[in-house]
Image (cartoon, rainbow, N blue to C red):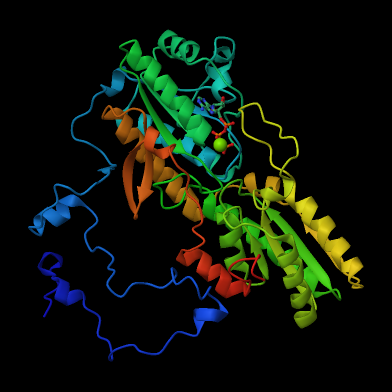
Length: 446
Ligand code: ATP
Ligand code: MG
């Protein structure tokens, strides 16, 4: 019998009592799940590990040498940088995301208040603020200067896209005596941060570059969820609720909501689950067959008289194959406007089928990006910022801070930018979406 001491736990203490052998086939097979594909089922042999740090497993006397493990975040007793002689820089790049100001504030309070660094400089308007001309606009960030930032969306430092020369940016850091640079931004920003760290290393300069990954799409890997994501899907759920109210109040009302998600449909999935009123969720990870979707919508309208469709901006890009593709200043491909395409095709199909629908198309993207962080994200941003300062002061570089399985960890930028976090169509999140919406596993089989 378990005594309450965690270290005394054995596998037997974790065994869950079952009533007997399970022999009845699940009804999910064939209705909700693709009968040819049982990947959604949990293997009865699988287990969730109890210990999530190597030290815990070692204390239990288990062999751990071969296990891959992240370095934990948090304060070290010995630092690389001497705080009163350390100058810190901060820059925000890429698109807006709730929580940017909270991270800036958290960095300043931790670096100044707890470590007592010599100064924190805010570089304006993204990496542009680190080139020779842009550096003239840099501002001093003091605890007084960041007071009240928690309540404001956007970024007080400004942001931009577009490439800058890493050598010129390192020149700026040297000219201003910056020892530690915090980069707050997405995959592009982190790659830029890696370039700055590499250039500094090439010159033999001990400059730390630590990233706080920003992605409203939640698409950076090795992070449970990115800051601002919860705020964003909460705000998106409000838009869905409003569109549902409109749709439900009109005969054959259709609400079509386009949400963020260039490559990953997490916001669409979570916002739809949060609002419970969604009939179809379309994400980039699941191929879209227009005929299958239109046939399904027809049945939904027959059955309940209205329908709500949520589409991530990166879904259905296969429908734009062969069309010319444009890039933004940072080199990111501009997406085909799947929301407008669906609006037109759903309207045309209804007309052809003799159904008089009333479709409302909502694109709340910019409203979602600019809201202040909610209390959960405010706390998360502050703690990420603290972890980032701890990492940098201990001399870590070319590193991002993240939270993995609930713990703050250090992730090499190279790893954080090597892949993308995506909704697994065969995973349990997507299964929850299928269960909540009643939409089919694949459109082509419809
Ligand atoms: P988001 O995708 O959320 O908008 P992001 O950080 O990916 O954020 P980008 O506009 O792609 O936004 O990039 C931000 C900055 O990082 C720009 O100044 C851009 O030039 C730089 N950058 C982008 N990609 C790279 C890269 N591969 N190497 C170096 N720098 C890059
Ligand atoms: Mg990006």
